[in-house]
Image 1 (cartoon, rainbow, N blue to C red):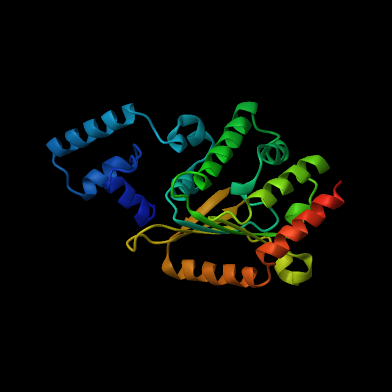
Image 2 (cartoon, rainbow, N blue to C red):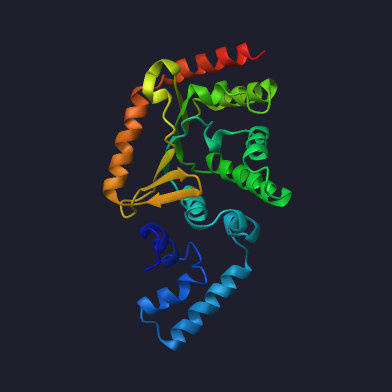
Length: 255
């Protein structure tokens, strides 16, 4: 009825997320709430919202991220494990501010300054999930071309590479590069993430990047298919030590 995943419904039911103004009447109808119950629930929600919102529920973020793209932010925030194939891009959660700004300057050059800055700030807030208490595990893959592209100039890319080298091997972060020598695996533009949540009651979710934003799918068959694809890419990737050596080589070549 809501067009969202079971996980999203569960978060609302457990009081960990507010339903939208569109979702609330559908939920109240589905659960056959009495007029008294409706009034009490609405009052509770309004009181809860008055205490503040999660960063991704702020109006400036919702103005930039809509639909599945906005729902992805809350799913990522609740993740226990994120398996990411970022293809020809540096994994978003591992990008430096300057790298993000260079990407936005090109990809959103026709957008307003305010909208571009809101996107940058949201990307930076997303990164905080990796350094919080009890962070999710990130298992990230990317192609060698992601680090060979001179985004924003040689020095900016060198700083981005140094950042990657400094965090690879942290207890919750793994990064493996798919080298040019991997053949077809090094040319695929597939960009997707598999998000797993704590507990056995929550379905994993696959997020795939499309030209108009993220699309989310929690169908078990789709999740299994995505896991097989991730393993196929991982089989062609360098291990972490070889990835660090390749990163250092690229950084030196940019000097």
